[in-house]
Length: 142
Image (cartoon, rainbow, N blue to C red; front, side, top):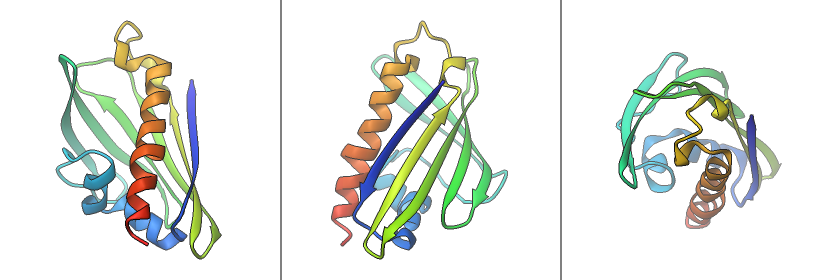
């Protein structure tokens, strides 16, 4: 199963690429728990995120990069079955505007008896990160 979230962002492609790839920016709109991030094939980072009464040990590995336009992570949770991919893609609209597309694929491989892994919750989560966290954050960078 794929979840696709798309949003117009009021930044040019170069600046938006920086916002979705540099750790200082990722801490502002994504996960403050990310210990490090490098956009290199094979780079792996592991960090815990608390949700209600569960801890989800995130494991990300960079598996594909199209410099300045997209990158893909393999996304797993230590201690849970399942593997998904997450792709961030940017398309320039103008020098001051871009479209970001996030595609989460394979979320149905995670245990569906866990509330946080249900498709509707994953969709809501990506809408939150892109529309309620990333977009407002980019408005502060103009």
